[in-house]
Length: 250
Image 1 (cartoon, rainbow, N blue to C red):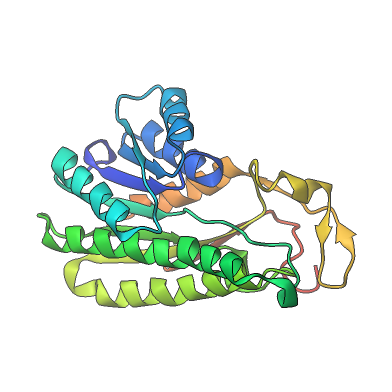
Image 2: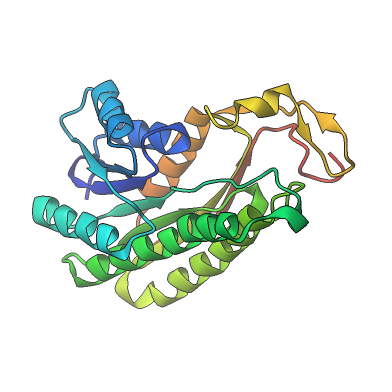
């Protein structure tokens, strides 16, 4: 099956990495469903793409009903789903551990973890039942799936959990030709991460400017993962600004 006949769903597609990935998939010939909470941002991304293969789908990934409606619409319009990039998420970074409000914790967990579960499960069911059977799920894990930033307990906890979710989906999907991998992204330049270029807290208490990479490089990496035959899987990929403080002592 060529990319021109494949259907992809990108969550959190209204801005940042999700938008960059959606645009890359559209340029490669995919039909792309752009999901996210903000209808105006999704419509703007569709307009920017200039593609008739782009579909805006306002969705709250925290809601099982909203996710069910999203996948019902995908099935009705396209009849199948080939690739899902589970990207929607929020950071919740910047609050000392002892001061994290329960509502903040719950919101980050609901969006980053429960949202990814709901979308992956709905995709899994569709991929299992469709013919030809199978598909690919790619989860956005983050560098924080390996090492935390200061004051980031909710975000870091969810990203570690995404790793377990990825492994479970990968294992359980084998018999249905469903591949699942994870991309761990470090310091991609987006609207939300631009402040890192101005200085962010480090583990030793200092504030330091961190190198950034273009979000288009992340999009190219996700596209590469998606382009592989279902007999091949990138289980985990780390993509990062070469000199960001992650490996060794930074």
